[in-house]
Length: 93
Image (cartoon, rainbow, N blue to C red):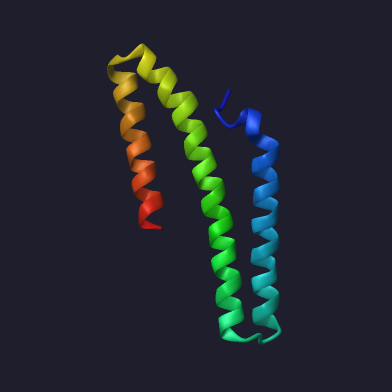
């Protein structure tokens, strides 16, 4: 079971909103909308995806990493390294 399983409905709702925003951006480009308006919508879609990413990261830390740390050893170290890499990717994006 994944750490986000209990939060799945909320994550799917957020992803649905982000999907709608991306489709809206495509429509805006098709309709030759103002550049600033398109950029504003891209920013909103990016923010929505970042929100999902942060929620998933929190669930991962609270579930997978915590569980692995309780067991310790190599698995715990691997999960911490994995979480650090995920955080680094989010910060760079």
